[in-house]
Length: 139
Image: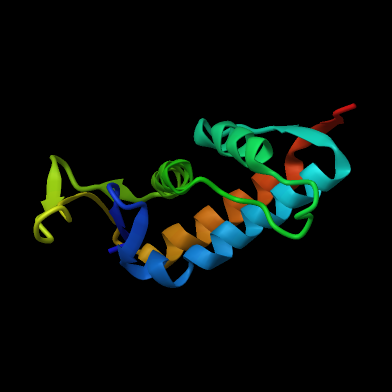
């Protein structure tokens, strides 16, 4: 299993990706923070990445120059898109985790014959995407 995502609570709950999620979010946070500090407006290729950028930019506090907030729902959608683009496939149908009263979750389970390879490809693709971003100065 590549990843088990709780879509309701925006959490990665398992799979090999669970141990790598911090790597992915740290790369994005670092790149976004650099762009925000330098007044650059990047353009991205992935559908959810521009939305993630807009949320981070709108929530950025210039006094908090060492931190950028990533919206959990948008980040999760982006990571699923990235992992699927790197060879993972989502289990078909609607999956629910009953979890108890008020804790029912919609789940996304991503699989692959070789989860390590999917994660490696996704990390490489993310690194390339963040390095190749074309930014322009925001006055």
